[in-house]
Image (tube, rainbow, N blue to C red; front, side, top):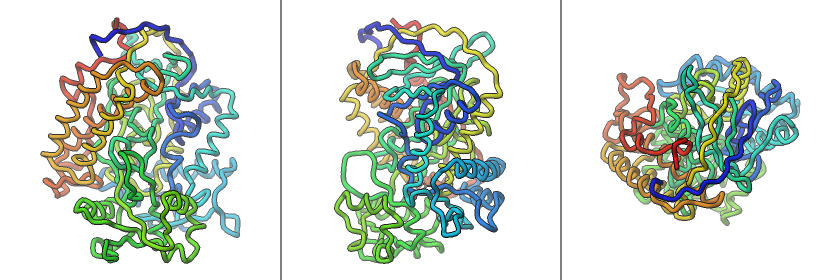
Length: 551
Ligand code: SIN
């Protein structure tokens, strides 16, 4: 960016009690809980409207121990078992226990759950859950039902000022004599320009990182913004090497980006995974066959896809038994691309789905920077360890939104005067898309389901070169171009951190598989914490947009 001309335009200043960045389950639930406690919230979302984020596309349900004979202890035990040695048992217990209270409150508030003839919520079963404990709402549209419900409440809450098409560019973190503290967010808002949101608390609820990879179940906005913002501000990030690939995204051709998910619940309801000859091969791979842990199924399918073989999900028996009614989202997805699951098996392939790592927080969502909080997929609470248990993510978002709000309200902090930065110039525009696609393809090839040291080293070098190229892009002058430039910067920062974490972990555990280190090693049964400075000199040299000495 240095050397370009910097047009100076005024930066508008907006004050609130809390800035929440993100409009999925975690962001909206946090904002609602904060206004319930009398706080004025500015909710920033880069999307066109509420709701945004991955929750909208979640076909799984919400795991919660509401069934007869089930308990928080059993749910926690299944969560710990899935985490491959890195789930914190205390956090798993907290998730399962608080989850019962939070979901019961949402049901009481009118969340339209699927219910049986007796009026009680229907509870389904998914892989690696020892009980029927998956709550659904709208069948396979649970995430959509939940966020639509929350969005209606957010819109009806006067204390929440929703800023749409508002791209967070930088966290404002200042040393006010008593150590560094988050003081707000600099954002670019369509139709407004640069806005400095000043608040003594900032909550990151920006979701995940699926769009770092060429094939993902995540929506276009999942570019790892919150993790990258936190990293650049100096926060600690943990367990970034652990990325869950969903085994069965619909394998449709297209440019890098989102592929529709075919929910695991289909396999729970009997759908088989077939190779090109029609053989149901999962029974050869694991005693639990189609219901083996998600990483096992993903690798079994991924190996075949990497050899150029097609893999299919056979929905024919399920559809013959009326499955299209139970899975309306899946039926719609298939119809949209001209596939008839009743007539022929549908092609599938693994896709980046969920990031177990993220911004390191305590049990109340506090990050390593005072005043900066994180909830939902952007955060790493160690609840998921090296491999998340199915349907625990919506629950996590709801539970930790409530905990962040309660802890934040208990901490008194006042806004401090913040120097208004000069409006920055962002390299971006349409050319950013080309660099983003190159990074996505590289991540899929070298940092996918199976990695090795040589591939990771190559990825690190090529990502650095892409970062340098991104800095040389022409300055963007509209919302789309600035958003594209900032997303590219975020994607590259985070991709480099993921590569660094994956390179250092010389073992295979949970969702992290190293072809050159196939064994799980006791010596590696610990978390990895990285900061931006772990990227080396390149990171130190990268300018922060809000640096006040910019021309
Ligand atoms: C799925 O429905 O297969 C995904 C649910 C989840 O990721 O928890």
